[in-house]
Image (cartoon, rainbow, N blue to C red; front, side, top):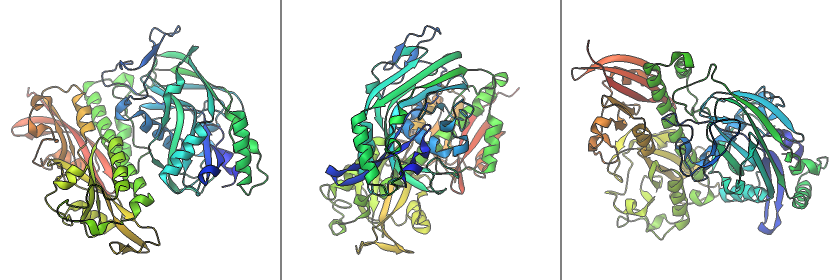
Length: 596
């Protein structure tokens, strides 16, 4: 992509820069950007709640300014996962309404329908934007950040190269400044965050100038500030970063010589123009704002929910004039449905991205498979095992990962202890294996009793395609592609269980998360919190809720509420579907109702 085209990213998230890494025999291009922000509210309504975070006195308000620590996990996602969500948000918005191209702030509300409110920086000149935001919104913005993707930089072939690409350009940042209401945020160097691998799909008229509907993988790096929700009223946020000018010119010159567009100016090749101040005059306004449980919606996920769900979501939006218990309960259910959707699609993202790594695509030691280890020994194909270990470290909902060769024999599993204790070697009878082989695409299974964790779980299976020149005899052909095997993650969603526990349900309330068959993957009520049947991690039985009218409705894509009788007790059921491909999972809140 010509340098001049890449610089159509200008006003906010990503300026593309070609970086020639000669000492590493790597031609790479880098992207550097000023910032945006997020919003989130704790379940108990508290604005400032983490003992690990830093508070700053704010002369304009009675509440202090607080920032999340780099090792925190706001709203169930890690700091680094939020930075990836920011990039996906930025690339989702067409150029003509993109906040990065807006000098006044008129577009600042674009796609801002989750718990985190994003703000964009500026290129080439200072800006002062005005923006109204709802209360209870945390604010995340990078001072300067970088991003590298395979679509923008086809010379990069592996995730390691993307990671190095983003890091190398971010290393050029030398000055960081951010203030809130005139109070400087200190120790900004502590908030240098590299994202996990993530993917994005470009819309029509996208800011990269690439064809629409292109999906690619990326890794980002940056210096960030993550503010907790600020008080109602007026606030001013200002930020600015700087880069090493001499290094910038050197990298810029290398980029120019590595690009065929000789008319491109070196000033566009390296983002020295980002060294301008961005100011936001924010008004935190209660009027027409969403209250109760803030939630992160799945706008940036792989699934596109159908009109039924979109209509129901709009119906569930609440305002300050309609604060009732029933509405709050609807919002809780909707919140949890979004959380489940996000967790599943984050897991899909990790598996699909890593399945394209050349290390994963080659199966070199299939002849070492034996029943003694239920796969290959622990000291064989260590590089693959390390990638699996890295995924498990990033996604705590994933208990273990397996690689199967095409005939469904286990190649390896991580942790190795889980692989070694498997009762058998072949899993061709599993729903997830039948699903992934039938569709030749990522498949999310129904809930089943896992042979590895001995509890209700789901499997996400992704086909792994071999490089075109791979002649491995263990592979199978699909159309013009050759399948090396299947990458399978086993999940039991403990993060959702913990989030439900933190909702302070009453003893007459229960929340269940069901699959497309109506089988529970999560089933929690505080009245039975010590019961094994209430905790999927230790439960060894599947629990069927398909008989409930609410579950029947959500399995057909409907959201709503209904009264039904269960074991002689009148129950209020509030339900919300979760679309996964052409099937529906869902969340149901069950509450006993006193007869009058």
